[in-house]
Length: 388
Image 1 (cartoon, rainbow, N blue to C red):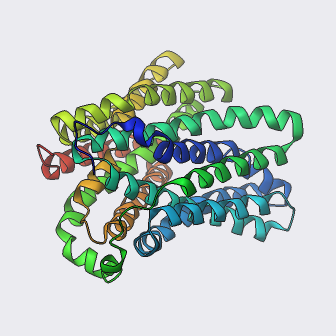
Image 2: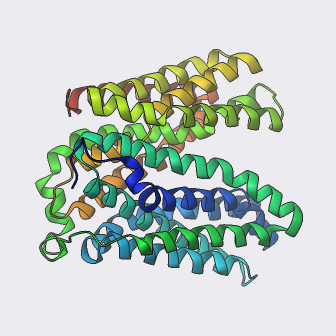
């Protein structure tokens, strides 16, 4: 590993960030069309929503196996295999083989995504010196966001020309390109022989204090992060705003996120992880509490931008904290457990919003989600080290 003074992020720009950009782009292209394809294949609206959720389910159930596979076979092979699995799954979507086959393909995309993301995180953890780790991780998250931001626009253009199949073809080509780049990445000096003897149970037992303290903070952070994607469109609908206005507000919030990912990493490397983790969750939590006070497009837009700012300054924080806490031996296995906590929180956040909204109304649902953000800020303030 190079030292902080000699290492440059551009030295891994292609090997680490190229696959990340293409993977995010691939997912961004097809994300809006999966529900349409499901309905065209005979799904009801409720069933189509469930099929879309299968991608997240595939990721959740695959995190720990992804860590085990990456530990055993190495980051490069894991990324190539995950890209190949994605290509096969997307190819199935090009043919009308029935709703069950389509659902299985969407689930497989989530599985492959879990392996791909974990292997990239483990690779960066190994090649980047600790003094630049946060910048590397925040850039990884930022590049993926850029790809996911550009994907729907490119997909809309190709759909207008060729139909839905064009979007799947573009997504397939992008993820195949990510796999091709990953294939050219040199193998790292592997400790797989020793690491393969370390089980997931051993990792969880030996690091239970970290997982039950800092890991809980990450779970709460992931919960409010995922919920932010729902609350702005829901509150816009509650105010009677049309769908196009809601989409614009959501897009503006996303644009703010992409502007601050690198400064966030720089702050983490210079002043410690707490300097970003706490403001990130605090800003989002307070913004959620302010959201029910908005009554028009301007005030809602302002709060949406602050939510985007809060999430953007936390770009890479989950990966960085996981990389800091991971042991040298069995690192991918630990990261698989770590990602399970993050994905579990991402699944629970919208469920909590839905449950409270069903009982007490949307304003209360958003407010309780805001309290989750404040709880995340308190937990991370307590357990994230003041200095790295």
